[in-house]
Length: 248
Image (cartoon, rainbow, N blue to C red; front, top):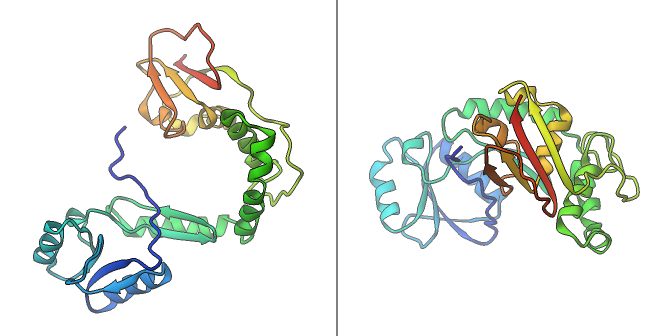
């Protein structure tokens, strides 16, 4: 399945961003840019990004795009090179929710739900986990093994369960081993995946699959995991975690 947009987190502190417009919409975008530490400039300045908050933005957007500037036109997704998501902030964790401009209301509703679900201490727990990076690299030099150990730490009941507030000593208990896992699915709906199936897909280094496995199922794997369509499961073993997905 093709992504309509590639989500990116851009560091704007000290960087110029063009803001064109006045009124409530422009003021809201200015507050957001100020919060990100951006330098808000006018249309004549040099910048890579611009936000246009005008009732009739077409000409302004065209001028900026002709200069190679990436533009967000408020409430005009058809003119946008990028969109601004709804944001959940648990510094340093930032969760961005976008709909490609289809419904800002839906993005806001999802943000409100997530605000209630995510603990206030998530940021502090993240900083503790970051402090362990050197220890984890030394203890698990293989990147695939290290990724699976971290996944086990963050799983429900794990040492760093984001919803459980855990803070246990780092260990490998519960880590997904190297090898191959065969998933036989009876439903084409990704919401019917068991917790174990979803976790295995999320940790896979590569996913072999039959031609009838829906893209929505394959999308539950990591974005950078290899996806290999084939009629029969692979015979040879490969480093890391291989998952073979077939419809039963």
